[in-house]
Length: 182
Image (spheres, rainbow, N blue to C red):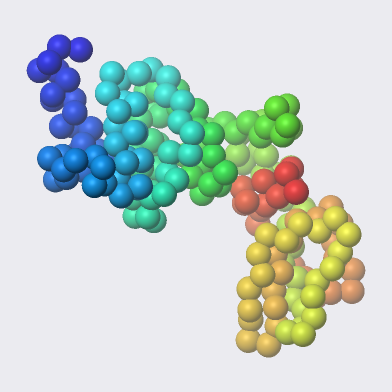
């Protein structure tokens, strides 16, 4: 890149990652999240057609995570972006295709809605008493929240829970992750 183009591109990218007002500070004084955003800007400097990112939102606060996620989503209109992450919410709304890797092998792949359909009958919310624990062989607990007089377990399991008050729940990518990796 010529010097003028590079300077213009740097200003544009600093605006995109919300660091333009911090441009004159030494990088050593930046927080971890700010450094992460600088790395994203650096990766975009030469406007690559394919962008491979590893945990691009690690260390970011929620508002910056959303900003970067939306930024990557917009970029994906004209680029191939491959994101390796364990942060499911980073890909839940922007991924066109997901590849689930387990021990270096493809466990499954496809469009998010197709993958979620495959486990749609395996996600339940189960109510138990405040002093009880939910136990079921093969159940993978996604979440436990406290109700007024009960605990509500959100689980992924192959069979409906017998002997418990439950309802089916809409599957999300966290449940998909649990299904394949726990």
